Image 1 (cartoon, rainbow, N blue to C red):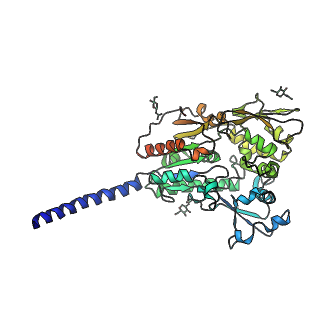
Image 2: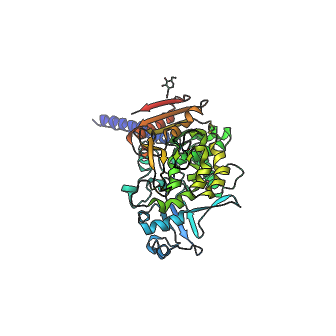
Length: 441
Ligand SMILES: *[C@@H]1O[C@H](CO)[C@@H](O)[C@H](O)[C@H]1NC(C)=O
Ligand SMILES: *[C@@H]1O[C@H](CO)[C@@H](O)[C@H](O)[C@H]1NC(C)=O
Ligand SMILES: *[C@@H]1O[C@H](CO)[C@@H](O)[C@H](O)[C@H]1NC(C)=O
């Protein structure tokens, strides 16, 4: 009996030893098995903080006292994006004037409004892109469902999973132009990629971008060497990227656009939206949309994507012509292949502005719209633009029918595709094909 017991416990010990070795192995595997992921949000896809200095000149008494001291930290910082009070008319105005950028033709760069400082909280972590307003999780969720799904398969914030939020009002410019905010962000993003790889045993990273974030990542990749990309980039997953801009951007510039929020008057935010460097970047590309099809039709003139300088002048925003011609056009004229494996996940089958009709009342009135195919925001033509361009490199496009521009971040069908892709990459089961289009309904 005694002997039996000791054999039994010895066996237990033996099993225990094996089990703990396996478990230890699994923990190590869990850490070393995963390629680190960097998340790059879209326009408006992360929190932004502001602080007003003595230089700030409020346009009204309300703006002078908004937001109250309870909404600011001890150094005067408050969350300017997103806060639901901006939906109320008097505050919308304060918000818009503080978010407005200025292009200075002398220094050839964009700047904040005088007296307004801004900063992006939590760079490196996913913290500021889960919810736009962390006190209103229910209505302001952004990348939370995607991050939670990645955490379920073992990713850990700031260890294997990183966020690269940025000041989405700013854009990038071709080399040779001054671009102090955008260039600094590209450098930070590059450093984050290198750091993420280093702390994960030298594994190259997977980048997952949404919308405008994809254009930033694309530009970063074009500005790195082949050996850097081989060393640090495993895969680029681009969700809903507007590769060639959108017709909707012309609507935004002409008449203001409120993301479907009925409380906000479009003209209240139009000036701020026109001032945004990244919005100008999203104008429909002439290479893609061409010089034949009018995108905007008015009683006096029609505008194709080649006529954007004339369009900007006619809508009353001639300040935009110079930066558009010298900074935006050279960047969007050619869609150069990034030479890393790319998977695009896009939505389609949703009414998306294709042609805008203005009557004699002019651009201050919202236009009638002819709808075309796309994800509700980005035209299908733009979502698919890389297909005919990146033919000599691994490229896969997954087109999910009925998926909108932002539901790509929460819909079970797209999340499944992202998780499957990430798992296949991590287990080395991904077949890399050139130009492969898959449609899912
Ligand atoms: C990268 O790591 C270095 C050294 O630890 C650190 O100083 C730097 O802030 C990190 N940069 C980013 C963008 O994570
Ligand atoms: C604008 O385009 C419409 C439709 O293509 C055409 O009927 C109209 O004549 C054009 N107007 C001008 C001013 O070119
Ligand atoms: C790659 O292409 C082959 C045929 O050319 C196809 O059978 C396979 O399913 C494709 N793989 C992927 C992941 O798309």
